[in-house]
Image (cartoon, rainbow, N blue to C red; front, top):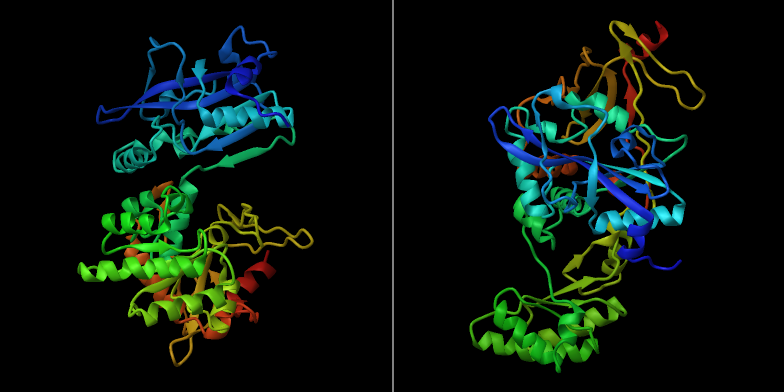
Length: 456
């Protein structure tokens, strides 16, 4: 398919947005955009606000409005005050200058034959810079009414219910942008990774940041050794040299030369990185070169599409690798690319409710999860029971974190979450951690929960 440039896309589509200033109870004003309508120019547009009441071909949910802005530089944003009184399903739309993300959506629309895309955002805040955007979100979260910057908050339920209306079988596209990378960095750090190469995640979550040079950096120098020396001058105590751009073994020898020069100056080469080739053979040969040069303290790092299976294979076969850089395989789920999550009603007022559809039966009643441990402190069994049930020798795991749409207390610090994970993971018997053998951890139903189903 031919690539369509912005000039051509502007002939096919127009963008209309609803821009406003959110006025907090404190009086602070925040510039926002609640919705963006991307519309085929063939669709009547005499009154743009009518578009907000049409059903689109697709709804796209993005992170935030980005850098799109009203075409009219003299446009005055409407004021919407907290609480809900200002929210309306019908929007006063104005012609909008799209940004690169919206142009990408237009290209998808051309390929799919869509004529109308409605763009919603997890946050209405208008800020194209991820760092300052996240800081604003965090700041608003501590203000009374600050959460209303999201169309998906409780006070705006009627608004988002209308906005999500679309043609029959029309899809919803989800695109979180850089937030997905931040979540990967955060979750992997919790589960035991030493750090991240994502600088924004390091700044936001105080996660240790590490990384190495790119092949393009090496190629920018006439000689490989010049690249190593320049890098060492900038990072005299944190240098990891990428040695496989041309020839891995020769790259290792060049790294030794610079490593010895650094040693004379009172600095230490931290490591070298392999990114291609036979990792077992090359890592052992590089280790030998480093050790014979008196640089046994220099570690060998490896990257290149690693997952748990490839890492396990290399280590069991004797690879001389101290650390692995893992990205793609942990940031995506090739073996399980989606997770079905469905809301099911289990209690209405005082009446227990369940579903009996074949293969999709549900369990009625509000629930609690209980855990038993053995005499050595290892997890032995989890039991799903009724919320008000008591089970001898078992500890309830679930506690209330939200009530009527609001946080109860404050979320735990990242370090506390990491500590809790390490404690829980160490208490899980080793056989359940195997990546090759599959053992099913025992999860059972309590007598009270079973009896409740029978009484319906």
